[in-house]
Amino acid sequence: MRYFNSANGYLFINNSLNKLVIIDKSMIMKSFPNKWMSNKIKEAFMCENYESTYTSGSTSERMQIVRPKDWWKGEYKRTANYNKYLMQKEINNWKKAILTTAICSNMACYLETPSYEERIIHNTLFLNIHPDPNTWKKTDIERICYEIELFKPLYIDVDPIYLSILLNKISDYGINFQYTPQAISLSYEYCTKNIRKFIESHIKCPIFNLYGSTEIGYILCECECGQMHLCDDLIQVELIPFKNRTDLFSLIVTSLRNPFMPFVNYKTGDIVKATSSNNKCECGLRTPTNIQWVMGREKDIITFGETVMTYGDLDEIVYSLSNNLIFVYQLLLEEKNGNLIFRYTTFNKKDIPQIHRRDFKAKINEYFGTNISVNFIFEQSIRPEISGKFAIIKTI
Image (cartoon, rainbow, N blue to C red; front, side, top):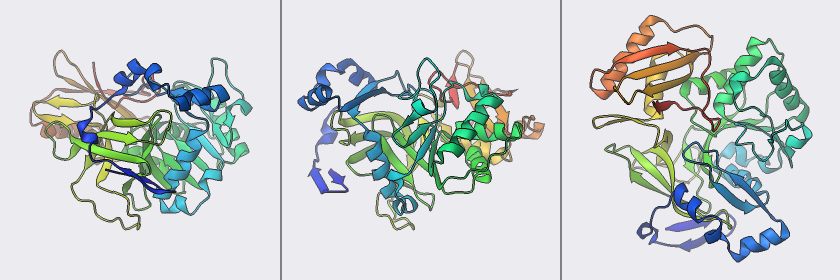
C-alpha cells in the first residue's frame, strides 16, 4: 500500500493494513483524548498551535478532533491538484465564502449572532448563522447577498441544498443579485441531480462536486469531465462490498494528513458506487477513477428482502420522473408496517401532476420487485436534521 505526498513523492509502503481492525467514530470517541495525546500534540497545546472542532453528526454522534492550526488551508491547496481548472488557479490564495450548516461553520458561529467581521477567518467568510435555511427571511437573504458582493470571494464552497434554497429565495423576493465567482464546489452532503441542474441553470461558472469529511479532509474531487478522482495525497482507500450489491462498497480510509490524528482503516459510514476498471480520464489526470459516485450514508438505506436502496438509487428514480420539478425530498420507511411515505417540495412550490406520482410508485415497486404502499405528502419545506443536513432516506 503506497502513500503519496505530492511534495516529497512516496512516503512509505505498507501491505499489511488489511490485517488491522477497522475503526469507526464510536471507537475514536471512547479513546479521545487520552490515547491520542502524543508529544507532538502536547507541544502544539503549549504553543497554542492547534485547533479543535467537531464533526457535523450526520453519520453518528459528533466527534471531537484536534489538528494543526489552519489545517484546512492546506486541504484546499492539495485538492486543487485533482482538478485541472483549479490547478491552473491560485485557489489557495483566493478569497473564499462558505455556505453550509451552522454546525459545519462552528468555528465562526456562536450563541450570539456573530458579526460580519467575526465570521471572516483569514481569507474565508462563513455566510450562514441559522440552523434551518428554510427559515431565512428576506433580511437574511439580503444580508448574505450583500456580504458576498462586499467580500467578493473568487471561490464559494457550498452545501448544494443551502445554495439552491438561497437561489430560490432570491427569486421569490425579487432581489437583484448578479455576483458570479470563479468557481463553486458542492460538498457537505449529497447533491441530487435536480439540484445540480438547478444550480447550473442559475450560476454560470465552473461547478465541481467534492466529497470529504471534517476529520479526513477531501477524499474525492470532480474534474471538468464530470469524473470523480481520488485525492490520493497522503491517503489510501479500501472498498469493502456492501450487502449483496456488486456495485456498492463501504468506504474505508487511511489518512496521514493530520499529524495529530492520523486515521488508519477508518470506516467513513458512507457508501460509494465503483467499478473494477480504473480507466484513464479524458481530463489527463492519472489519479484513480474507479469510484464513480458517493451514494449516501450506510445508516440511511431502505431494504426489502435482498434489495437495497441508497440515496443515489432513489435519486435516479426521482430525476427520471419529475421533469426537474422536485426540489428537496425525503423517503420515509414506516418500520411497523413497511409502508413508504414520499415527502417532497418543488422548485415552483406547486404540486407535481398525478401521473408523476403514479409513475414514481410504479418505479419503486419495480425496483424492489414487490407491491409496496407509497403515500405522498407535498410540503412547502422540509426541515433538516439536528446536524443541519437533510435526510433523503429515513426510517420512522
